[in-house]
Amino acid sequence: MMLEQDTGLSLAIAQIVQRLKGSSLHSQLERQARGSLHKPEIKLESLKEDIKDFLKTSGWEKRLQNAVYSELNVFPSPCHPAAPPEHMKEPLVYMRKAQGSWEKRILKSLNSMCTELSIPLARKRPIGEQKELFNKWNEMGTDEPDLSLFRPVYAPKDFLEVLMNLRNPNYENGDQPSFRNHLGLIQVPLKVKDIPELKDYFSELGLNTGQLGIDDSTQVPPELFENEHVRVGQTVLTEQDSAAAQQYVRQGCPTALRAELWALILNISNQPEVLLCFSRDTSVLEHFSYNSATPPKSYIRGKLGMEEYAVFYPPNGVIPFHGFSMYVAPLCFLYHEPSKLYQIFREMYVRFFFRLHSISSHPSGIVSLCLLFETLLQTHLPQLFYHLREIGAQPLRISFKWMVRAFSGYLATDQLLLLWDRILGYNSLEILAVLAAAVFAFRAVNLMEVTSLAAAEAVLADLSTLKVMPLLQIFLFATVT
Image (cartoon, rainbow, N blue to C red; front, side, top):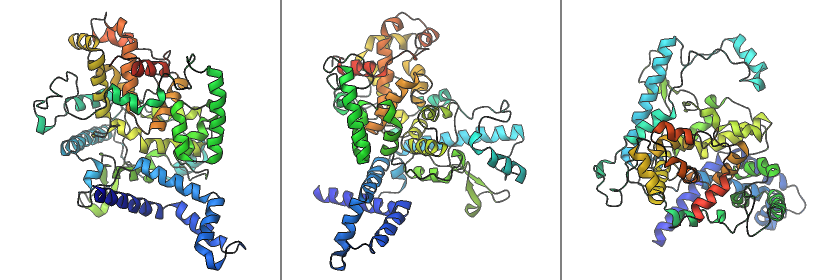
Protein backbone atom coordinates (compact mmCIF):
# COMPACT_ATOMS: atom_id res chain seq x y z
CA MET A 1 0.00 0.00 0.00
CA MET A 2 2.80 2.41 0.99
CA LEU A 3 4.66 1.51 -2.19
CA GLU A 4 1.56 2.38 -4.27
CA GLN A 5 1.23 5.73 -2.48
CA ASP A 6 4.92 6.50 -3.06
CA THR A 7 4.56 5.61 -6.74
CA GLY A 8 1.48 7.84 -7.03
CA LEU A 9 3.30 10.72 -5.34
CA SER A 10 6.34 10.29 -7.60
CA LEU A 11 4.07 10.28 -10.68
CA ALA A 12 2.27 13.43 -9.48
CA ILE A 13 5.57 15.24 -8.81
CA ALA A 14 6.97 14.20 -12.21
CA GLN A 15 3.80 15.38 -13.97
CA ILE A 16 3.80 18.77 -12.20
CA VAL A 17 7.53 19.31 -12.84
CA GLN A 18 6.99 18.48 -16.51
CA ARG A 19 4.09 20.91 -16.84
CA LEU A 20 5.85 23.74 -15.03
CA LYS A 21 8.97 23.32 -17.17
CA GLY A 22 7.06 24.64 -20.14
CA SER A 23 5.56 27.61 -18.28
CA SER A 24 6.56 31.27 -18.19
CA LEU A 25 7.08 30.91 -14.42
CA HIS A 26 9.94 28.46 -15.05
CA SER A 27 11.79 30.88 -17.33
CA GLN A 28 11.17 33.75 -14.88
CA LEU A 29 12.59 31.68 -12.01
CA GLU A 30 15.67 30.82 -14.08
CA ARG A 31 16.16 34.49 -14.96
CA GLN A 32 15.84 35.54 -11.31
CA ALA A 33 18.27 32.82 -10.17
CA ARG A 34 20.84 33.88 -12.78
CA GLY A 35 20.41 37.55 -11.86
CA SER A 36 20.97 36.79 -8.18
CA LEU A 37 24.50 35.51 -8.87
CA HIS A 38 25.73 39.13 -8.97
CA LYS A 39 24.45 39.90 -5.47
CA PRO A 40 27.06 40.17 -2.70
CA GLU A 41 25.10 37.91 -0.29
CA ILE A 42 25.36 34.96 -2.76
CA LYS A 43 28.55 33.03 -1.87
CA LEU A 44 30.13 30.40 -4.11
CA GLU A 45 30.65 27.90 -1.25
CA SER A 46 26.94 27.97 -0.33
CA LEU A 47 25.56 28.81 -3.78
CA LYS A 48 22.54 26.46 -3.81
CA GLU A 49 21.27 27.44 -0.34
CA ASP A 50 21.88 31.17 -0.94
CA ILE A 51 19.89 31.15 -4.18
CA LYS A 52 17.06 29.26 -2.42
CA ASP A 53 17.04 31.88 0.35
CA PHE A 54 17.00 34.70 -2.21
CA LEU A 55 14.02 33.15 -4.07
CA LYS A 56 12.21 32.74 -0.74
CA THR A 57 12.74 36.32 0.49
CA SER A 58 11.96 37.87 -2.91
CA GLY A 59 8.56 36.09 -3.12
CA TRP A 60 9.40 33.71 -5.97
CA GLU A 61 9.16 30.61 -3.79
CA LYS A 62 5.57 31.59 -2.90
CA ARG A 63 4.72 31.97 -6.60
CA LEU A 64 6.12 28.50 -7.26
CA GLN A 65 4.06 27.07 -4.37
CA ASN A 66 0.91 28.69 -5.79
CA ALA A 67 1.65 27.24 -9.24
CA VAL A 68 2.10 23.73 -7.79
CA TYR A 69 -1.11 24.11 -5.75
CA SER A 70 -2.95 25.22 -8.87
CA GLU A 71 -1.75 22.14 -10.77
CA LEU A 72 -2.86 19.88 -7.91
CA ASN A 73 -6.33 21.48 -7.98
CA VAL A 74 -6.80 21.21 -11.72
CA PHE A 75 -5.24 17.94 -12.83
CA PRO A 76 -6.54 14.57 -11.72
CA SER A 77 -4.28 12.18 -9.83
CA PRO A 78 -2.02 10.37 -12.30
CA CYS A 79 -3.28 6.96 -13.41
CA HIS A 80 -1.25 3.80 -13.09
CA PRO A 81 1.64 4.02 -15.62
CA ALA A 82 0.18 1.07 -17.56
CA ALA A 83 -3.30 2.64 -17.83
CA PRO A 84 -4.26 3.88 -21.32
CA PRO A 85 -4.29 7.68 -21.74
CA GLU A 86 -8.07 7.82 -22.25
CA HIS A 87 -8.49 6.73 -18.61
CA MET A 88 -7.17 10.15 -17.60
CA LYS A 89 -10.07 11.67 -19.53
CA GLU A 90 -12.76 9.25 -18.30
CA PRO A 91 -12.30 5.78 -16.74
CA LEU A 92 -15.75 4.37 -17.70
CA VAL A 93 -15.98 3.11 -21.29
CA TYR A 94 -19.75 3.63 -21.59
CA MET A 95 -19.38 7.28 -20.52
CA ARG A 96 -16.67 7.82 -23.15
CA LYS A 97 -18.89 6.25 -25.82
CA ALA A 98 -21.87 8.40 -24.81
CA GLN A 99 -19.75 11.56 -24.95
CA GLY A 100 -18.46 10.55 -28.39
CA SER A 101 -22.00 10.01 -29.73
CA TRP A 102 -23.12 13.37 -28.30
CA GLU A 103 -20.19 15.14 -29.98
CA LYS A 104 -21.13 13.60 -33.36
CA ARG A 105 -24.68 14.85 -32.90
CA ILE A 106 -23.51 18.39 -32.08
CA LEU A 107 -21.20 18.46 -35.10
CA LYS A 108 -23.99 17.24 -37.37
CA SER A 109 -26.23 20.06 -36.13
CA LEU A 110 -23.45 22.62 -36.63
CA ASN A 111 -22.61 21.42 -40.12
CA SER A 112 -26.25 21.31 -41.26
CA MET A 113 -26.74 24.91 -40.07
CA CYS A 114 -23.64 26.02 -42.00
CA THR A 115 -24.91 24.25 -45.13
CA GLU A 116 -28.38 25.85 -44.79
CA LEU A 117 -26.93 29.34 -44.42
CA SER A 118 -24.07 28.82 -46.93
CA ILE A 119 -21.57 30.02 -44.35
CA PRO A 120 -18.13 28.37 -44.12
CA LEU A 121 -17.09 27.23 -40.64
CA ALA A 122 -13.59 28.62 -41.03
CA ARG A 123 -12.17 31.23 -43.35
CA LYS A 124 -9.46 33.84 -43.07
CA ARG A 125 -10.83 37.35 -42.49
CA PRO A 126 -10.23 39.81 -45.34
CA ILE A 127 -7.60 42.49 -44.48
CA GLY A 128 -10.27 45.19 -44.12
CA GLU A 129 -12.23 43.11 -41.58
CA GLN A 130 -9.02 42.34 -39.67
CA LYS A 131 -8.19 46.04 -39.31
CA GLU A 132 -11.73 46.94 -38.26
CA LEU A 133 -11.77 44.17 -35.66
CA PHE A 134 -8.40 45.24 -34.25
CA ASN A 135 -9.60 48.84 -33.86
CA LYS A 136 -12.75 47.75 -31.99
CA TRP A 137 -11.07 45.02 -29.90
CA ASN A 138 -12.24 46.25 -26.48
CA GLU A 139 -15.76 47.04 -27.71
CA MET A 140 -16.39 43.65 -29.28
CA GLY A 141 -19.93 42.45 -28.74
CA THR A 142 -21.45 45.94 -28.69
CA ASP A 143 -21.78 46.12 -32.47
CA GLU A 144 -22.87 42.60 -33.41
CA PRO A 145 -23.77 41.54 -36.95
CA ASP A 146 -27.29 40.24 -37.51
CA LEU A 147 -27.35 36.83 -35.81
CA SER A 148 -31.09 36.22 -36.12
CA LEU A 149 -30.61 33.44 -38.70
CA PHE A 150 -28.30 31.46 -36.41
CA ARG A 151 -29.90 29.04 -33.99
CA PRO A 152 -28.13 27.63 -30.92
CA VAL A 153 -26.28 24.39 -31.69
CA TYR A 154 -28.04 22.84 -28.69
CA ALA A 155 -29.91 23.87 -25.55
CA PRO A 156 -29.74 22.36 -22.02
CA LYS A 157 -32.99 20.39 -22.52
CA ASP A 158 -31.45 18.56 -25.54
CA PHE A 159 -28.50 17.59 -23.36
CA LEU A 160 -30.78 16.37 -20.56
CA GLU A 161 -32.52 13.97 -22.98
CA VAL A 162 -29.13 12.41 -23.73
CA LEU A 163 -28.27 12.02 -20.03
CA MET A 164 -31.64 10.40 -19.33
CA ASN A 165 -30.81 7.66 -21.85
CA LEU A 166 -27.41 6.85 -20.32
CA ARG A 167 -27.10 3.23 -19.16
CA ASN A 168 -24.26 1.21 -17.71
CA PRO A 169 -24.33 -2.10 -19.67
CA ASN A 170 -23.05 -3.95 -16.56
CA TYR A 171 -26.19 -2.90 -14.64
CA GLU A 172 -28.64 -3.12 -17.49
CA ASN A 173 -31.73 -3.36 -15.29
CA GLY A 174 -30.43 -1.53 -12.26
CA ASP A 175 -29.25 -4.81 -10.68
CA GLN A 176 -27.20 -3.02 -8.05
CA PRO A 177 -29.39 -3.29 -4.89
CA SER A 178 -28.78 0.28 -3.72
CA PHE A 179 -29.65 1.60 -7.15
CA ARG A 180 -32.81 -0.39 -7.85
CA ASN A 181 -34.87 2.05 -5.80
CA HIS A 182 -33.74 5.17 -7.63
CA LEU A 183 -36.80 6.61 -9.36
CA GLY A 184 -35.24 9.67 -10.95
CA LEU A 185 -34.44 10.39 -14.59
CA ILE A 186 -30.73 9.51 -14.25
CA GLN A 187 -30.32 5.75 -14.45
CA VAL A 188 -26.59 5.18 -13.99
CA PRO A 189 -25.13 3.90 -10.69
CA LEU A 190 -22.51 6.45 -9.62
CA LYS A 191 -21.39 7.06 -6.04
CA VAL A 192 -22.70 10.39 -4.71
CA LYS A 193 -22.51 11.86 -1.22
CA ASP A 194 -25.39 11.51 1.25
CA ILE A 195 -26.35 14.25 3.74
CA PRO A 196 -23.93 13.12 6.52
CA GLU A 197 -21.06 13.08 3.98
CA LEU A 198 -22.11 16.48 2.62
CA LYS A 199 -22.27 17.90 6.17
CA ASP A 200 -18.75 16.70 6.76
CA TYR A 201 -17.49 17.94 3.39
CA PHE A 202 -19.13 21.38 3.69
CA SER A 203 -18.44 21.66 7.43
CA GLU A 204 -17.44 25.34 7.15
CA LEU A 205 -21.05 26.12 6.13
CA GLY A 206 -22.27 24.86 9.54
CA LEU A 207 -24.82 26.78 11.60
CA ASN A 208 -22.21 27.75 14.21
CA THR A 209 -19.63 29.03 11.72
CA GLY A 210 -19.56 32.69 10.72
CA GLN A 211 -20.69 33.20 7.11
CA LEU A 212 -20.96 36.09 4.71
CA GLY A 213 -24.47 36.01 3.28
CA ILE A 214 -26.18 35.21 6.62
CA ASP A 215 -27.94 38.16 8.27
CA ASP A 216 -28.72 36.74 11.69
CA SER A 217 -26.16 34.24 12.91
CA THR A 218 -27.11 33.13 16.42
CA GLN A 219 -23.51 32.75 17.57
CA VAL A 220 -21.70 35.85 16.27
CA PRO A 221 -23.20 39.29 15.51
CA PRO A 222 -22.87 39.71 11.70
CA GLU A 223 -21.01 43.04 11.86
CA LEU A 224 -18.41 41.63 14.29
CA PHE A 225 -17.80 38.59 12.08
CA GLU A 226 -17.69 40.72 8.94
CA ASN A 227 -15.09 43.17 10.32
CA GLU A 228 -12.85 40.35 11.49
CA HIS A 229 -13.37 38.41 8.23
CA VAL A 230 -12.31 41.44 6.16
CA ARG A 231 -9.18 41.82 8.31
CA VAL A 232 -8.25 38.16 7.81
CA GLY A 233 -8.93 38.49 4.06
CA GLN A 234 -6.54 41.42 3.78
CA THR A 235 -3.86 39.36 5.55
CA VAL A 236 -4.44 36.45 3.14
CA LEU A 237 -3.97 38.82 0.19
CA THR A 238 -0.79 40.25 1.72
CA GLU A 239 0.60 36.72 2.13
CA GLN A 240 -0.32 35.87 -1.51
CA ASP A 241 -0.99 32.22 -0.61
CA SER A 242 -3.43 30.42 -2.96
CA ALA A 243 -4.19 27.59 -0.52
CA ALA A 244 -5.01 30.02 2.32
CA ALA A 245 -7.22 32.07 -0.03
CA GLN A 246 -9.13 28.94 -1.07
CA GLN A 247 -9.77 27.99 2.55
CA TYR A 248 -10.77 31.58 3.40
CA VAL A 249 -13.49 31.94 0.72
CA ARG A 250 -15.40 28.91 2.05
CA GLN A 251 -16.98 31.42 4.47
CA GLY A 252 -17.61 33.91 1.66
CA CYS A 253 -15.67 36.82 0.16
CA PRO A 254 -16.09 40.44 1.23
CA THR A 255 -17.21 42.31 -1.90
CA ALA A 256 -14.18 44.61 -1.92
CA LEU A 257 -11.71 41.70 -1.80
CA ARG A 258 -13.44 39.15 -4.05
CA ALA A 259 -11.80 40.06 -7.37
CA GLU A 260 -8.27 39.78 -5.92
CA LEU A 261 -9.01 36.66 -3.86
CA TRP A 262 -10.46 34.79 -6.84
CA ALA A 263 -7.44 35.76 -8.95
CA LEU A 264 -5.14 34.45 -6.19
CA ILE A 265 -7.02 31.12 -5.91
CA LEU A 266 -6.97 30.67 -9.69
CA ASN A 267 -3.28 31.70 -9.77
CA ILE A 268 -3.87 34.45 -12.34
CA SER A 269 -0.81 36.55 -13.05
CA ASN A 270 -0.95 40.34 -13.09
CA GLN A 271 0.77 40.36 -16.46
CA PRO A 272 -1.56 41.63 -19.22
CA GLU A 273 -1.74 38.84 -21.82
CA VAL A 274 -2.36 38.95 -25.50
CA LEU A 275 -6.14 38.82 -25.40
CA LEU A 276 -7.70 36.25 -27.72
CA CYS A 277 -11.35 35.53 -28.33
CA PHE A 278 -12.23 32.45 -26.26
CA SER A 279 -13.13 30.46 -29.37
CA ARG A 280 -9.67 31.11 -30.84
CA ASP A 281 -7.61 30.56 -27.69
CA THR A 282 -5.71 27.32 -28.32
CA SER A 283 -4.42 27.22 -24.70
CA VAL A 284 -7.96 26.03 -23.78
CA LEU A 285 -7.20 22.78 -25.69
CA GLU A 286 -4.99 21.69 -22.76
CA HIS A 287 -8.04 20.95 -20.61
CA PHE A 288 -9.05 18.13 -22.98
CA SER A 289 -6.31 16.01 -21.38
CA TYR A 290 -8.62 15.65 -18.33
CA ASN A 291 -11.99 16.35 -19.97
CA SER A 292 -14.07 13.38 -21.19
CA ALA A 293 -14.82 15.41 -24.34
CA THR A 294 -12.61 15.55 -27.45
CA PRO A 295 -12.17 18.72 -29.52
CA PRO A 296 -13.86 18.50 -32.94
CA LYS A 297 -11.56 18.22 -35.96
CA SER A 298 -11.92 19.85 -39.34
CA TYR A 299 -9.91 18.98 -42.43
CA ILE A 300 -8.54 21.29 -45.07
CA ARG A 301 -10.75 21.03 -48.16
CA GLY A 302 -9.93 17.99 -50.24
CA LYS A 303 -7.81 16.38 -47.48
CA LEU A 304 -10.57 14.68 -45.48
CA GLY A 305 -9.24 12.00 -43.12
CA MET A 306 -5.57 12.96 -43.58
CA GLU A 307 -4.38 13.72 -40.04
CA GLU A 308 -1.56 16.06 -41.13
CA TYR A 309 -4.23 18.36 -42.61
CA ALA A 310 -6.51 18.27 -39.57
CA VAL A 311 -7.22 21.38 -37.50
CA PHE A 312 -9.37 21.80 -34.42
CA TYR A 313 -12.50 23.80 -35.01
CA PRO A 314 -13.29 25.98 -33.23
CA PRO A 315 -9.57 26.46 -32.42
CA ASN A 316 -10.24 26.15 -28.65
CA GLY A 317 -12.23 22.92 -29.20
CA VAL A 318 -15.37 24.17 -27.41
CA ILE A 319 -18.73 24.45 -29.21
CA PRO A 320 -20.90 26.77 -27.09
CA PHE A 321 -24.54 26.00 -26.25
CA HIS A 322 -27.54 28.27 -25.69
CA GLY A 323 -26.75 30.25 -22.52
CA PHE A 324 -22.97 29.68 -22.60
CA SER A 325 -22.28 33.41 -22.14
CA MET A 326 -23.81 33.19 -18.65
CA TYR A 327 -20.54 31.62 -17.45
CA VAL A 328 -18.78 34.94 -18.06
CA ALA A 329 -21.55 37.49 -17.39
CA PRO A 330 -21.21 37.56 -13.54
CA LEU A 331 -17.46 38.11 -13.79
CA CYS A 332 -18.10 41.43 -15.55
CA PHE A 333 -19.27 42.77 -12.17
CA LEU A 334 -15.84 42.01 -10.67
CA TYR A 335 -13.26 42.84 -13.34
CA HIS A 336 -13.06 45.99 -15.44
CA GLU A 337 -9.78 45.20 -17.17
CA PRO A 338 -10.59 42.98 -20.20
CA SER A 339 -7.33 41.03 -19.90
CA LYS A 340 -7.93 40.11 -16.23
CA LEU A 341 -11.61 39.35 -16.86
CA TYR A 342 -10.69 37.01 -19.69
CA GLN A 343 -7.99 35.16 -17.74
CA ILE A 344 -10.37 34.59 -14.80
CA PHE A 345 -13.12 33.32 -17.12
CA ARG A 346 -10.76 30.99 -18.98
CA GLU A 347 -9.44 29.52 -15.73
CA MET A 348 -12.98 29.13 -14.29
CA TYR A 349 -13.98 27.34 -17.49
CA VAL A 350 -11.06 24.88 -17.64
CA ARG A 351 -11.36 24.12 -13.90
CA PHE A 352 -15.12 23.95 -13.46
CA PHE A 353 -17.61 24.96 -16.10
CA PHE A 354 -16.60 22.47 -18.81
CA ARG A 355 -17.83 19.71 -16.47
CA LEU A 356 -21.39 21.07 -16.75
CA HIS A 357 -21.74 20.13 -20.42
CA SER A 358 -19.52 17.02 -20.71
CA ILE A 359 -20.66 13.44 -20.04
CA SER A 360 -18.40 11.94 -17.36
CA SER A 361 -18.38 10.07 -14.05
CA HIS A 362 -16.51 12.86 -12.23
CA PRO A 363 -18.09 13.92 -8.89
CA SER A 364 -18.39 17.48 -10.23
CA GLY A 365 -19.62 16.32 -13.64
CA ILE A 366 -23.19 17.09 -14.67
CA VAL A 367 -24.27 13.40 -14.51
CA SER A 368 -23.16 13.11 -10.86
CA LEU A 369 -24.76 16.48 -10.02
CA CYS A 370 -28.09 15.34 -11.49
CA LEU A 371 -27.92 12.06 -9.59
CA LEU A 372 -26.93 13.83 -6.35
CA PHE A 373 -29.87 16.25 -6.73
CA GLU A 374 -32.38 13.46 -7.39
CA THR A 375 -31.02 11.27 -4.58
CA LEU A 376 -31.20 14.12 -2.05
CA LEU A 377 -34.81 14.88 -2.99
CA GLN A 378 -35.92 11.24 -3.09
CA THR A 379 -34.28 10.51 0.28
CA HIS A 380 -35.16 13.64 2.24
CA LEU A 381 -38.34 14.89 0.58
CA PRO A 382 -39.89 11.60 -0.60
CA GLN A 383 -43.49 12.85 -0.59
CA LEU A 384 -42.60 15.86 -2.72
CA PHE A 385 -40.44 13.76 -5.04
CA TYR A 386 -43.16 11.14 -5.62
CA HIS A 387 -45.89 13.77 -6.03
CA LEU A 388 -43.94 15.63 -8.72
CA ARG A 389 -43.01 12.37 -10.44
CA GLU A 390 -46.65 11.22 -10.49
CA ILE A 391 -47.89 14.42 -12.16
CA GLY A 392 -45.16 14.24 -14.84
CA ALA A 393 -43.07 17.03 -13.32
CA GLN A 394 -39.81 15.18 -12.62
CA PRO A 395 -37.82 17.71 -10.52
CA LEU A 396 -34.68 17.36 -12.67
CA ARG A 397 -36.56 18.72 -15.69
CA ILE A 398 -36.83 22.01 -13.78
CA SER A 399 -33.47 22.15 -11.98
CA PHE A 400 -31.28 20.96 -14.85
CA LYS A 401 -31.01 24.37 -16.51
CA TRP A 402 -30.01 25.97 -13.17
CA MET A 403 -27.15 23.52 -12.71
CA VAL A 404 -25.90 23.61 -16.31
CA ARG A 405 -25.53 27.39 -16.01
CA ALA A 406 -24.18 27.21 -12.42
CA PHE A 407 -27.32 29.24 -11.45
CA SER A 408 -26.09 32.24 -13.48
CA GLY A 409 -29.04 34.27 -14.71
CA TYR A 410 -31.35 32.77 -12.08
CA LEU A 411 -30.04 34.13 -8.77
CA ALA A 412 -29.48 37.79 -7.91
CA THR A 413 -25.85 38.66 -8.71
CA ASP A 414 -24.73 39.16 -5.09
CA GLN A 415 -26.18 35.73 -4.21
CA LEU A 416 -24.61 34.08 -7.24
CA LEU A 417 -21.17 35.42 -6.32
CA LEU A 418 -21.58 34.04 -2.77
CA LEU A 419 -22.39 30.65 -4.35
CA TRP A 420 -19.38 30.81 -6.69
CA ASP A 421 -17.17 31.72 -3.68
CA ARG A 422 -17.97 28.25 -2.36
CA ILE A 423 -17.33 26.55 -5.74
CA LEU A 424 -13.82 28.02 -5.64
CA GLY A 425 -13.41 27.38 -1.92
CA TYR A 426 -14.25 23.68 -2.15
CA ASN A 427 -12.88 23.17 -5.68
CA SER A 428 -16.15 21.38 -6.43
CA LEU A 429 -19.47 21.92 -8.23
CA GLU A 430 -21.42 19.60 -5.90
CA ILE A 431 -22.83 22.63 -4.07
CA LEU A 432 -24.95 23.34 -7.20
CA ALA A 433 -26.89 20.09 -6.71
CA VAL A 434 -27.29 20.78 -2.98
CA LEU A 435 -28.65 24.27 -3.66
CA ALA A 436 -31.05 22.93 -6.32
CA ALA A 437 -32.44 20.45 -3.77
CA ALA A 438 -32.59 23.21 -1.12
CA VAL A 439 -34.71 25.38 -3.48
CA PHE A 440 -37.25 22.55 -3.87
CA ALA A 441 -37.28 22.05 -0.09
CA PHE A 442 -37.91 25.78 0.44
CA ARG A 443 -40.86 25.78 -1.99
CA ALA A 444 -42.12 22.32 -0.99
CA VAL A 445 -45.49 23.46 0.42
CA ASN A 446 -46.43 25.26 -2.82
CA LEU A 447 -45.08 22.42 -4.97
CA MET A 448 -47.23 19.83 -3.16
CA GLU A 449 -50.30 21.66 -4.50
CA VAL A 450 -49.38 21.75 -8.20
CA THR A 451 -50.86 19.28 -10.68
CA SER A 452 -48.67 19.75 -13.77
CA LEU A 453 -45.10 20.43 -14.91
CA ALA A 454 -46.11 23.92 -16.08
CA ALA A 455 -47.53 24.74 -12.64
CA ALA A 456 -44.38 23.44 -10.91
CA GLU A 457 -42.22 25.53 -13.24
CA ALA A 458 -44.34 28.58 -12.42
CA VAL A 459 -43.72 28.10 -8.67
CA LEU A 460 -39.96 27.98 -9.33
CA ALA A 461 -39.84 30.53 -12.15
CA ASP A 462 -38.27 33.34 -10.11
CA LEU A 463 -35.25 32.57 -7.91
CA SER A 464 -34.04 36.18 -7.80
CA THR A 465 -35.28 36.82 -4.23
CA LEU A 466 -33.66 33.71 -2.72
CA LYS A 467 -30.83 33.97 -0.17
CA VAL A 468 -28.33 31.24 -1.00
CA MET A 469 -26.51 30.74 2.31
CA PRO A 470 -29.55 30.35 4.62
CA LEU A 471 -31.07 27.88 2.12
CA LEU A 472 -27.90 25.78 2.04
CA GLN A 473 -27.44 25.87 5.82
CA ILE A 474 -31.03 24.91 6.60
CA PHE A 475 -31.06 22.09 4.04
CA LEU A 476 -27.69 20.63 5.09
CA PHE A 477 -27.61 21.24 8.81
CA ALA A 478 -31.25 21.40 9.88
CA THR A 479 -32.34 18.31 7.88
CA VAL A 480 -33.12 15.29 10.04
CA THR A 481 -31.00 12.37 8.80
